[in-house]
Amino acid sequence: MSNEHQVLDEMSKPIETEMPVPVPVAFGKYSERVLLKTILDRRDGGLGLVDQRVVVGGWVKSSREMRKDPVPAVQAGVGGEVKESGGGKDVKCVEVFQSRIPFLRTIIKVFGGSTGHGHTNKEKLESIVPRPPQPAVSILQISDGSSVISLQIIVDSSIAPPSQLMPTGTCILAEGVLQKPSLQGKHAIELKAEKLLHIGIVDQENYPLSKKSLPLARLRDCAHFRPRTTTVASVMKVRSALNQASHTFFQNQGFVHVEVPIITATDTGAFSENFRVSTSNFSSKEVNSEDPISMDDTANVSLETVKHSLVEKIKKVEELKRSDSNKEALIAAVQDLHKTNLLAEELEARSKSKSKSKAHSKTKSVKTHNEFFSNQAFLTTSGSLHLESCASALGNVYAFGPRFDADKSESKKYLAERWMIETEIAFSELEGAMNCAEDFLKFVCEWVSENCYENLYFLSKRVDRGIVDRLHSMAPTPFEKITYATAVEVLNKVTEKTFETKVQWGVALTEEHESYLADEFYKKPVIIYDHPKELKPFNVRINDDGKTVAAFDVIMPKVGALIRGSQKEERLNELSKRIKELGLQKDQYDWYLDLRKQGTVKHSGFSVMFDVMVLFATGLNDVRDAVPFPRHHGKLHN
Image (cartoon, rainbow, N blue to C red; front, side, top):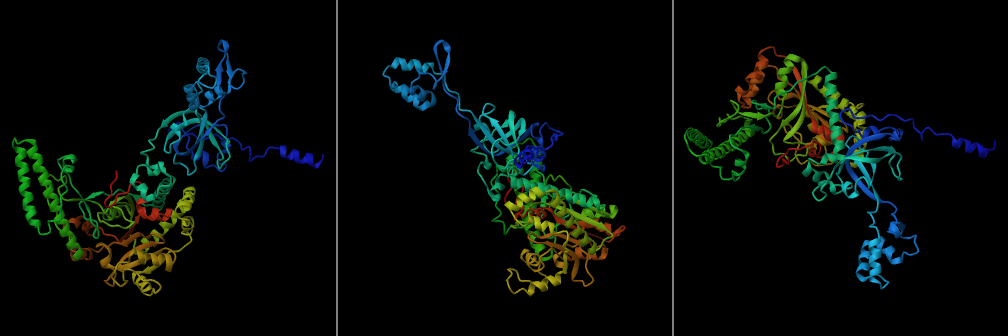
């Protein structure tokens, strides 16, 4: 056999990579559609599913229209016979134009054609069959959120007009057959639609994502649509993976997951403003119809005077309720009471803020009309106090949920509603909590690297090229552990740059200081412990020097402080002394002190700022882009 024949013989043999073994597609359990990731995220890009019939759904990311070859115009001949306009000898050139171009056909009809015989042209125009719309196909790229890759779908205009399918954001549910791409491109497979089971049309003028490449800051104004973008969808997938990884770590370590209250009577934030929970007996429509209450002229108003007025207005409302007064008078009185109550709360908050800046003292709450609870209630800033109660019985516990902070911070790392992971470890001292925090971060980074590679790879191209390497480097890198005193010493020796806030003992380290330590000096995660007692909450255990407390912060490259933890004060006398020093309202903490009176135990724990952890894993710079629906000062869109 010649060499030429041998080559031809080899070429004629089937190549396994070109003809993959068919593998049945995985259908969804709770709907008839197939998730796109089961097609597109395969190693072969979906080639092994060629010729399989599937139902897929998703939203159009991009589209284009391709016209088919035009259908020849036809003419009705003698006896109803239909002839092609270009094939008969008795068809004139002008009639071809009339059948091809509607605009010219109208002009020619108006001017009577070129023959000079008006009745003849009229008869011929009437004998021409109207030409149907030129056939076309819609080439759609759709995504259902399960994969960063889009599926190409071919839809013939006989199934649905392109104008209905092509707008960005259109939702379709299509049934068809998977096939090799009919057009050259990056896709390994496409779906030829045979029928559309659903079409969710889009109003392009009002759909915000109709515009290409909107910046993340603009997307915040349409938070209900932004998960449809691949970038935000990838962030949400990474966030979900971090959530799952966090639960997996603590469950693997024997921690018990408990729920702590969101509404609490205990002021859990010694260094932050609280949201107070209240009720009203009038509709939001009535409240919103009022003019905003101005507090500009209340500087000289006495809180005691307002309290006295509040009591009088409560009496007036009660009298109107008992009498047969008209409804309008009662509503007006209730609204007046509401305004006075808001003024009392504002003045009380001012007084509280002033006293907190001096000694973090807490003023006694104002008893208002028709309160739901028997005493003043807050949205919790931290669940750690209640978590200690559970640790005293269950050992190692953790909680995961929203925490609320009313500080009007402009920081890109804080929200009014933020998600926290909080832990408490019974019989553990500071060193144990620090080791647990380090192990936790290494575990979740490794988990996300393995389970969200496609999303991380996409974000590395769009947001931050270093995120994949940063996550991979976490596992083998030991964290640097230094005291607060060492951190101050290192920062004071810096000569190549000037910090906005001067570094000295007793001053809280700023984001600028923390960033320098983790990003420039140590170039890895840093744990700073033994902080001055004035910088940490009242319940942190005081060290033997009497000046510092057993607290620590975990500082991560790029994002700064990610975890804050401490060993709690288990000694009743020391804890009572701290409450008195700070001027806290002791009766709020009677239940907390009981834990020290009845079977006390040494324990420590930490709090993870979950939203900031998402920043670290995705490379984002603003926490408002790391949560589905951000709540922050001045903004509450939906």
